[in-house]
Image (cartoon, rainbow, N blue to C red; front, side):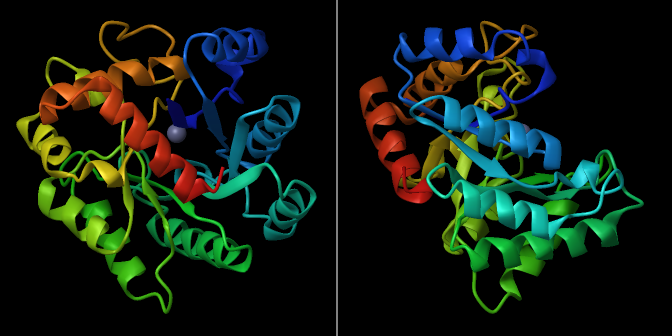
Length: 261
Ligand SMILES: [Zn+2]
C-alpha cells in the first residue's frame, strides 16, 4: 500500500508526523509521497522525505496559492537538484476555479511553468483540478485543453478525480493515472464518480488520501492519515469485484512505476 498523495508536511501533523509515519509503516503502509502546496510546505515535504526511508516528495505551488506568492522556479529547481533521491514529482499544480475564479489566467501561466520544470528534470506531475460550483467540469476541460496543446505530453496523475467518465477517459488517453481519495467511500458518492472507478483500468489507478483532509468512511470528519488508503483500496475492490490484495498489489506497482520509487 502506497499513499501517493499525503500532506504530512502540513500544520495538522506538525507535532506528530514522525509518530504517524512510524505507526502507519507498522500497519502495512509501504511508502508515502508528501505533496507541497507552496515553497515552504514543499521544503517541509522534502525534509520529511530525507528524514525517513520510503518517504518521498512532490514540490510545487498549488493553484489556490498562486495569489500568495510567485512561483520561484529557481528555488524549486535548487530543491530538486539538492534532493534528487527524494523529489519524485512536480505538484500539486493545476486549476482551481472553486476557490479562485479571478486568478484563472495566473493559474494557467503558473501551471505551464510547472510543466516546464517537470520536463527539465524529467519528473511526473501531480495535477489538482476543481471546477466552479456552477460548472464543475469547466476546470477539467480547460486543463485538458492546455495539456493537449503541449509539444510533449507530461506523465502524471490527475489527483482526487471528481469529474465524469468522458473526462477520465481523456486523461487516460493522454497517459495519465487517475488518483482516487476518500470521496469514493462516502455514502453520498455520486454514481458518476463510482462509474469512473468501475471503468478505469486497474493498472492506471493510484491510491491517495490527501490527508489531513478527506478522511474515508468510517473515519469521515476526523483527521485523515496515509494508512487509510486501505479503505480506498477496499472500496475499489468492492466496485470492481476483485480482491483487496489485487488492488493493493497493482496500485503499488503503478505508484512505483510512475514515481520511480
Ligand atoms: Zn492535496
